[in-house]
Image (cartoon, rainbow, N blue to C red; front, top):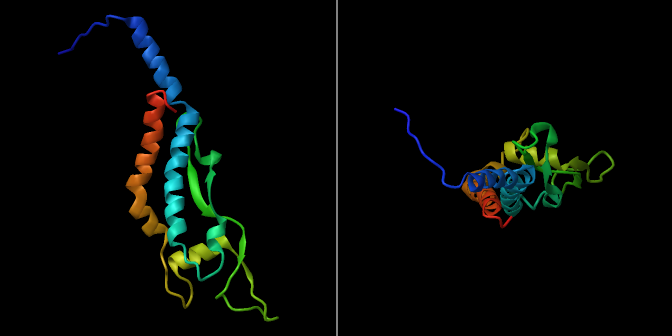
Length: 149
């Protein structure tokens, strides 16, 4: 059985719907996704191993346009950029410390490497803060809906 309803002020309804469209436009979605990713970045920063070099200095949040869809989906990634001189990676043939990609070093620490046990810090950070990240994203969206964002 179909339900019926009437609208006393159709112009106000149309204006409210138009307001929703602009409030949830791409800039809002990008701000929301970035807010959630930043929560993860801050947690990873807290727990990144400090005894292996300056890994934490290369931690950043980046927008991934190739994995995003304009107006529908904004994808961000927390990653490590640049190189670091490792403290515990041994030395090369000349006796100097070697430069290693921060991304590679983070992977070796997170997952372990030949002869080295894993020292997870990314996955536990994600698990610990996933609800907080969702709340941060929702806060941005709610503020936009209420005209504050």
